Amino acid sequence: MAEQIVIGCDGSPDSHRALDWAIQESAVLGAQLKVVVSTGRPVSVEPNLYGSFLEAIEEEAGTVAAQAAERARQRGVTAVGVVERGDAAGVLVRHSESASALVLGKRGRRGMRGRVGSVSAATAAHAQCPVIVLPGCGDPDARAGHATAGPFAERIVVGVDRLGAQNPAIVAATRYASRHGQGLTLLTVVPEDTTITTGSVDLDRAIREQLLGPAQTMVEQVAEAVRAGYPDLVVETYVLFGRPAKRLVEASRSAELVVVGTRGYGGFRGLLMGSVSQAVLNEGQSPVMIVPAHRRQ
Image 1 (cartoon, one colour):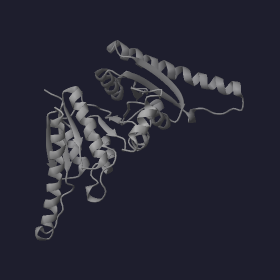
Image 2 (cartoon, helix red, strand yellow; image 1 turned 120 degrees about the horizontal axis):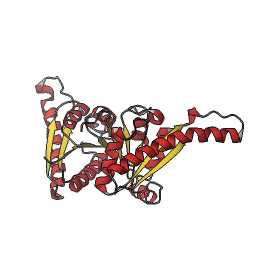
Image 3 (cartoon, one colour; image 1 turned 135 degrees about the horizontal axis):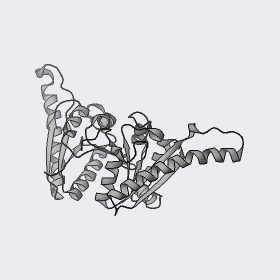
Image 4 (cartoon, one colour; image 1 turned 135 degrees about the vertical axis):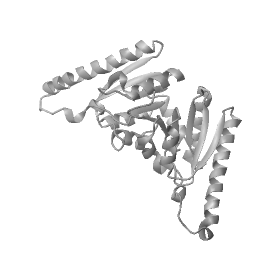
């Protein structure tokens, strides 16, 4: 059975950017693309007062879905458009149950049409499949120039925690890197709040080295497990000090994709929507993949 990628569309510029990314991803994987457009929550009003207005919203949604699906077909991708009433996040979460990935733009259209961008975090927190959120349009040329010169250029970066190689985020990042022929960077962070300044440079250095050892061992064990399953995959490891969210956001400046989970432990114990994952989702400059803690195999 062919894989299916779901793209949430609302006709906004970020939505178009996400659509193009999803089309390219579908082409690479030979997957079907499902374009989902939500008209919003049903409104209980007198049909004679607002009937024509609601019909106009549904007609516009149908046009967005049809045009997006046709755009994909023109590029050789099998695509279907779907229009549904209901809360956008709820609609997308339902479709995630049968999808291999769900793609969204970071921001949607404002007002009643602000369907995608306003719910990207809610969708990522509850989806049954990995959710890829594309950054805001901004200046893609400026980022492209910086990314090619950055330390994580053309690499998939994923945060490592005490779950190790069994962490669904590690599994998803490894598979993505392998399928796309890109390198994998395993990154863990020793939080700043675990270190105490003593006033002695030598003692501070010794404490940092003592903390660094276990973290390095942990990330190298994960790397060994990944290499055992994917011997052709180029894997590198990083152990950094600082705030996990900040370090991942910094990595996103040059990374091809940053992968986080909805929950984490150890150095990434804050990987809950609303903490580290939320920070990376909000501030990341690369596409961000958020993998559910109990990812469907």
